[in-house]
Image 1 (cartoon, rainbow, N blue to C red):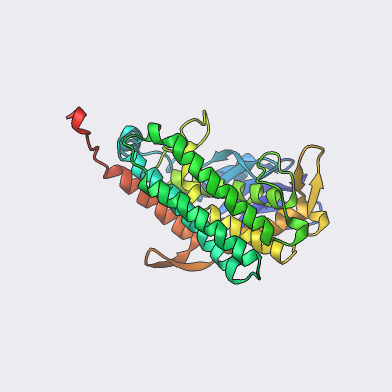
Image 2: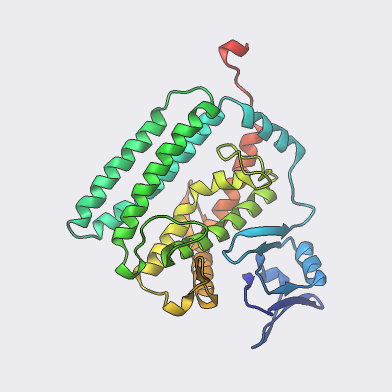
Length: 334
């Protein structure tokens, strides 16, 4: 279970050994053994006793902004970066193998996008099917260029990789927009601020995913601030921006299905003068949909686990990867 405090005046406190959620409408008591995470939004509050209860049970507490992006978190002192992992992480950061890691990451992201587009192609009629097919071929070309890139160091290859990744993503979102019901179509991918309903949903969903990935990395002992491809985010968890590329497709799929089913009504959104925002009902629908999707059991890497468990297992696998890393020297460095 995930506690989401995103309505003004909502409060979470400790009641003996339980959590007590108070809103203007009702009160609810929860055993901490049932709770996996707590998200606290603007206008909500959580007492220090409730925070200590969460720490006692190793429950991740995340404070988020209006778009669902984590702004701060509290976790048990039993979590945190293990020094050996962090040292190896730094070695990899500056090592020659980082380029191969990033190429694999970008290729996987494009492959995930292609897989989703293939499902839309099957479900579409001409001429959209033909348009999707042309877009798929163009994106495959970008992916093949990424795989074949012949460079030695990441810093030299990064601008080219970002260009190909961006071009593939623009094509991908153009096709997603063409597939959507007319009310949800959009001109371009807009982040902060969102210009339309689809991007408002996507931004909030990505914000949720950022928080879950950061928490998974911290629990695995990996430093989320030492990014590999995203190195320029001062005082931001840059590695989260790397790792999320593998999982963005999960949020893409959930948002696509909500829009396709026209599950979001006008009261799910609001315009604040600068951006299209999710309102209370919209947040509740999206949060529940994303959490249900992450709880679904799937086969991945030979294991049947929930997507959330796969995410944590893969964070631990990344920690082992860093621990086992041994730098390879270029001929000129030997």
